Length: 343
Ligand code: 1CP
Image (cartoon, rainbow, N blue to C red; front, side):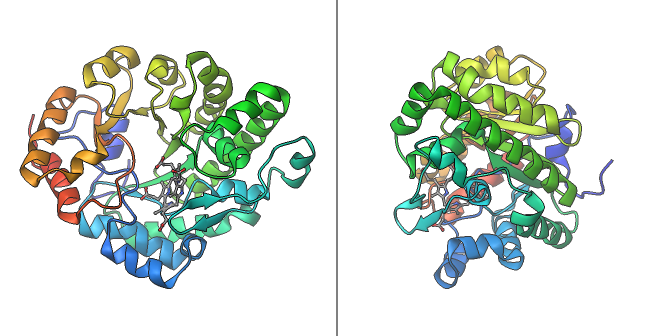
């Protein structure tokens, strides 16, 4: 099927049994790598995203340095609101800031469903270059944010622990919220399809703030839009859905037709399996903060995680993004322990 030298990830997503689970780490290209920090001194964040040569170099860093079984495109979920017409800034030490967020019906006139080939071509150029430079070493994961998580930033205007203003927007102006969610969904479907056309082997939808919603709200505000995205993509590539904290909806997420579901460290493997059923791959779920432990502890804990999943339909990963203060040899210990594992 593929000409990849290492297709462990795709095999597992397609339901095949492999001798060990594939391993990659969410946010594996980033601030814990000194090589990334060097480029960060020279180029702005969106300059790094928009220059295919830089995005390619950063994407490949964790493949060469840490030895993961998959590459994930270096970009950000916030390039979508940017393409829709909102200004997005990345402020050092503060994170993303959208100075003119969406608050009212009038604000909706400032955004649109863009032609992704006009606004996000740089991403597709980066993917083509990455595929060429990877030369079949490992598969490439494309990604986008889930509509609810993107709405969080478009309305709140910045990161938040609660995203209370985004929630208030959904509760006080539901029609507007659903109009916005649908616009984000339509953009995301076109965006992910174009990522696949450019060469992405699989795509992951990040619903980082899905866990802020209760089960019913998650269905209406988040999952019904994720369902549209999975339906549009699933016949082209395997889709992985990671809705952090939304353990209560694993069963309905499995029913979308997603091949993989990301889980965080707050749900044990056996419960996640019980909720999700047997027809989906589970991805996770090492606590990223545990990578700050001494290396022997990391090795022991990673083995315990792998035993808990029993190398059955499992992709080894963290339960959320790697932290910037994790030493590189600790990240390597995580990856090496999976690679040495025999069930
Ligand atoms: O150099 C820097 O200081 C920028 C830090 C940074 C990086 C390295 C940001 C800003 N984005 C990224 C890259 C990124 N973002 C990737 C690259 C590929 C990889 O995984 O290696 C990916 C997949 C993302 C996705 C992303 N961006 C998410 C979803 C995943 C998650 O961690 O929950 C979210 C929520 C964002 C928003 C965002 N962008 C950047 C930051 C610091 C944040 C989080 C802000 C917040 O906590 O609200």
